[in-house]
Image (cartoon, rainbow, N blue to C red):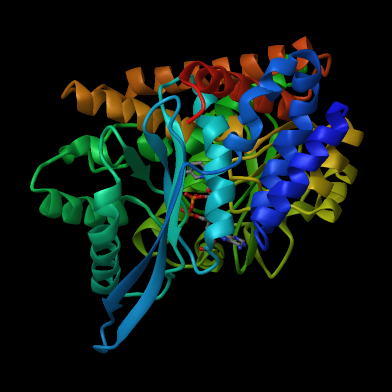
Length: 447
Ligand code: NDP
């Protein structure tokens, strides 16, 4: 059997064993495609069922989350934690609260997380969790009761040396606070290393809030430099308006770019004169309102209800909202409008068709597992500070983040070249992330 047949047989098995999980299939397909060249060059990576084991989570936990709403009615949600791979360190990955959450989505995110965490160079394994709970429109007390119920079950599965969750869509500082409070109560100890994204007075790290967005822009800056361009003076589209998007906008503008648009699930705002980040933060983080509110208070901004943000003209696109938000058609629009660089702040926001359009049109493309690794890397730095009971300064932590993102870029670049696919950062990220995990799995035996 040649490599092509082996990999396609393996993928067929994964489809059968994980039916009805299209996002998981998509994430696995992309990695398997990249691994063909590795298996060709270093066939020992095909031994001991290594790739099959890598595609099967070590543990999947699904649990009931009952809670009482403000009307006194019992509501029932479903909670998930997929502990995918702990060969490099404790499971690490965020919790997502969004109505679309299901097992397949958590598995795709957990699978991506293995390679992303490996790329950071830090000792963390891959995991992900969440719930189909929708925080939108819920009162403060409803959010708190939900978080407490969620942690009442999750607490027995996590720990500083076992599994260290963080935030993701719908889980920010407020939710981490309620989750941590309930964990502390149930465990009867202040185990600060059990969650990251904590408040600064109780074990949190400076830069964690900004890290994913900043890191994505640091990666973009490196990618542009390596390809003869400069972010200073560039026009940039940032989709979304949550944690990742806000800090990607902030850093891009600090480096001299103009951010020409941002969005939420109701539509997009065009901002030809750039974004007033403080106003956007006030609307999203304090008022918890929709992006449409922005235009009433910012000159030159326009709201496009239900519009497609990728129709804007820009040099750089940073998709920072959610999976599969950038289709093949949208990618064509970006190319037609002269976009030359795309870096994923979100996880898997570009469809396979979009990636193909970028590839065939010479657009430099950075996959999420590399470009958005700054968040989890800084979470690992938070764990280091917790372990040593220390708090680092903003500038020191930001410097570490920047160095990590530069190293990830260089690693993707040199790995792609080593396998004769120069400039293919998808392949570079997948292979570099894979090899470290694979070598550790081979060293630790068939488990
Ligand atoms: P937030 O909840 O803070 O923000 C999410 C943003 O995405 C909101 O603006 C939201 O709009 C928008 N969005 C969500 N779903 C959709 C949808 N179906 N269509 C259009 N817009 C949508 O999440 P984060 O900023 O933390 O996460 C964004 C992405 O980045 C996710 O893919 C996440 O996995 C990834 N990521 C996050 C990290 C982190 O540190 N937070 C780390 C690495 C990756 P609306 O309010 O209308 O729903």
